[in-house]
Structures are given as C-alpha cells and as structure tokens.
Amino acid sequence: MFEPLDPAQTRAKGPASAPGPGHRHDWPELARALRQLLPAKAVVTARQELLAYDSDGLTLERHQPPLVVLPETTEQVAAVLRLCHERSIPFVARGSGTGLSGGAVAEVGALVIATSRMRQVLSVDLANQRITVQPGVINSWVTRSVVGDGFYYAPDPSSQQVCTIGGNVAENSGGVHCLKYGVTSNHVLEMEVVLPDGTVTTLGGPQPEMAALDLRGVFIGSEGTLGIATAITLRLLPAPASVAVLLADFASMAAAGEAVRQITGAGVLPAGMEMMDSPCIQAVDDYFGFDEYPREAAAVLLIELDGQELEVQDSVQLATRLCLQAGAGSVRQAWDESARARLWKGRKSAITAIGRQSPSYYLQDGVVPRTALPEVLAAIGDLSLEHGLSVANVFHAGDGNLHPLILYRASDPGVQERVHRLGGEILRLCIAAGGSITGEHGVGSDKRCYMDWMFSADDQATMLLVRQAFDPERRANPGKIFPTPKTCAESARRAVELKVQGVALPEGVVAF
Ligand SMILES: Cc1cc2nc3c(=O)[nH]c(=O)nc-3n(C[C@H](O)[C@H](O)[C@H](O)COP(=O)(O)OP(=O)(O)OC[C@H]3O[C@@H](n4cnc5c(N)ncnc54)[C@H](O)[C@@H]3O)c2cc1C
Image (cartoon, rainbow, N blue to C red):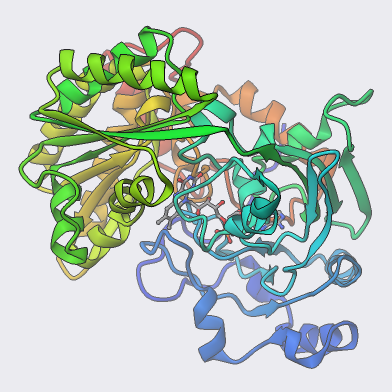
C-alpha cells in the first residue's frame, strides 16, 4: 500500500554516516534562507558544533546532521517547517538527545530542529492543577516550579534532570512513579503542535475528556513522526501526605522477583518499585563510594509507598513482611525526605556508575509481565554467558519494564554486531514471555527491524495511514519506527527464525 522510505543504511559503521537522500539538498543555501527567518546564532553550520548532535543516548549509531536550528518560539518553528514544506526538506525534532533508540538522530541528512532555547514555563494554573510549558523545559523543572505550593509532576524518567518535556511526549516516557500514576500520556492535557507543512494546531484540551477524536493520544508516543510539539499543558498532582521508601536486599534476582510478585499480588500498589542487580550495586559503590546497599547482595529492591499516613504505615508493614517471606536478608525503612533521598541515590546514579565502569554500554528496553520476571532474568543471565558479554540490570520491576545494560568495549572487533545480536535475543525472550520490544524508550531507528516480530503487515500499514494523515510526504523524522526492506533486510528472516524455533508467541502476535 505504501512506497517504502529510502533512508540511508540502518547502522553507521564510523563516526558519520554515508550520505543519504537528504544530502541532495543544498544545505548552505537553506542555511542562508533560514537566517532570514531566525536570529543568525540560531542557525548552526559549524562542523564542530554539529558534532554535538550526531547521536543521542544510543551512541552505537552516529550521523552528523548537515544543519541545526535553535528556534525560540512557535512562530519560528512554524516558519521553519513552512520553508521545509516548500522545499521538501526532511526534519528531525530534538530535545536534550537523551533518547535511547536513535530517535533524535538525522540519519537521512535532515534538518535538526532543537528545542533547547524553548525553555519557558508559559503559565501555571494551580486552581485547575495544570501548567503549560515550552517543549525544551527540562522534566525536573516542572516539579521545581510548583513544589513550594504542594504540587508535583508525576512522570519522572531517570534522566529527568536532563531530558525535555517535548522528548517525554514524543517517547511517551515512563519513570519510577509511573507504576502507580501512569506514563506521560496520562498527564498531558493539551498540546500546541506544528504540523510538517507549518500549520499550527491544538490537540486535546484543558479538560481530560474532549468531545473529539483523541488526536492528543495519537501524537503522544509518535516519536517525532507527526510534527513538533511547541507548547504542552501538563496535569499537576498534589504532593502525597506521607511517603516511605523500603530497601530490601536479596541473595538472588529470582527471590527479588518473587517479592515483586507477592507485593503486587497482595494488592499493594507502590508509587514505584525498582530493582538493581549485583553489578549495578557494586558499580555505585565503586564509583560513588555509596555504601547504602549491601555490597554482597545479588539484588536490591526499592519500594516507595505513598498516600495518607495510616494507609502508608499499613502498606509498609505488609510489603516488609512479604519481602522477608520471599527471602530478603533485611528490609530498611526511610521516612524523612533526606533518608529517602539517600536510598534512592544509588538507583538514580546506577546507569552513570555503569558508564564509568564500562567504556561503552547498550541499554536495552523490553517489557515482560511482572509475574515472568524471575524466569526472564535468569534467561538473560544465560544469554549473557552464551554471548560472552556482561549484562547489568537496573529497572522498573513493578512495571516488568527491563533495562538490561549490555557492556562492551567499542574497540573490540565485531563487537557491535554481537551486542545487537544479544539485544535482539533479549527482546525475543520478552515477546515469548508475553511482553513487548519497548517499554518506554521507543522504537526509533534501533528497533524498527523488530517491529515485524510484533505487528503484521496490516497492523503496520494501519499505523502508516495515521501517519500519512499528519505527514503525507513522511518528512517528519524519516526512517524511524517502521521497517523497510532497505533498512531491515534481515527482519523478515529473523521473524521466520522466531517461528521456526517454535518460540511460544502470545495470542495476537504474528510472526511472518
Ligand atoms: C541515563 C538515562 C536514563 C533514562 N531513563 C529513562 C526512564 O526512566 N524512562 C524513560 O521513559 N526514558 C528514560 N530515558 C530515555 C530518555 O531520557 C527519554 O526517552 C526522554 O523522554 C528523551 O527526552 P529528550 O529531551 O532527551 O529527547 P530526544 O532524545 O532529544 O528526542 C527523543 C524523541 O523525541 C522527539 N522529539 C523531541 N522533542 C520533540 C518535540 N518538541 N516534538 C516532537 N517530537 C520531539 C525526537 O525527534 C526523538 O524522536 C533515559 C535515558 C538515559 C540516558
């Protein structure tokens, strides 16, 4: 039904990609035209400066963009997109570039439109519990703007000190507190969006229920393929009356997984429930001198409980008992803010600590039903041994959202291929367990070749029809999410392998 896109090759072999179709554009001339629309300093052409935009958090893939613009207002974004429309220029929106699926990278030689100068809080409406921000506002700034009034913004990716609200919307990001409170889509009321032809439109509305198609819901999680969000109205929540954090240590990941199963099975809904394995525990100790977690533990579980004081006390007692029953060596409680922050610190710095320990890592993102955690974690351990690559685990256990970090040395010959192979095997395991190829980091370019594993050709054609309505020429973040024969020559073969090897696919999942 659709003509395939024609992006450059899937994975760059060196620091910059081979030229793609976007390279046919006259970029110096476009830069001159853009300087008529934007302040001179908002058009970035110097090679050294462009280097800063050549990857996101997925450093395995690097593609230097030909040109970057830094607009400050919706009008400027609209003017840039109108120019792109007139000249058929592809473009890629970019927030802070912390994405982990290659989403903000211009692999086909597209114009990058970065929102790093769109950082204003536009309005705060506490009576109606909402705040409107520009897309470049950093996630943690939202809570910081209203915490003094007793409110907060719930979705809190671990990257929240750096990532932007625009990036969160595009990825439908999750975080520690999304177990109880839901992901980004549950907290966005309204968005001002510039469509690929430069039209400015509003999706959603000030009230949660709108008498129209939920185009707000369609846009959230669309990974920059439908347009650019330029103002976002978010829900604010009142801060809970009481909060406690538990730290439980275990002699095996399976026992920690069992505790997760018991706690949720007992009807306790923690605000967050996070797990770290021994390599992560030791890395935070080695690199930050952080000795709050027992160094010899095979796993630690952090459980945050919030609500009214009596309710929290009851939940703390029950969760403590269930952890001990599942085999916890000890369970510590933290009630005041600084004690809670001390327990969270190791979890929040785990990925940075791993980054100091290993020259390179590839952070995978898959989902399994939380009841399958013990078996899937054990199977990931087996795969790590089989592929000869270390894997560290730190993840949102309550959501079954795994984040295995595959550690490698980029200079080892052929290592990237091995890393991708192991990453793919882990996702195959997730699907076989009834889960998904992504929990919160999106498909981007990294996982487009796995889409066939979960979605039939008809499923994908339906998604492309929706995209077509917003972006008929597919110039917004081209080449992302959907596989094409050119980018994913192997995907059909992998899917067939999946079927041939008799992996038990969950109902509704099609391997072809
Ligand atoms: C250490 C670390 C921890 C992380 N922890 C989490 C976590 O707990 N939960 C989680 O969900 N993610 C996590 N992430 C992933 C990442 O931080 C999120 O995906 C985040 O939302 C990306 O925001 P960004 O501003 O960096 O976006 P970018 O990486 O710049 O862009 C991401 C995508 O959004 C699009 N985009 C950006 N701005 C706009 C806009 N205004 N309009 C339309 N599209 C836009 C881009 O085109 C791209 O496709 C983590 C990443 C790191 C490095």
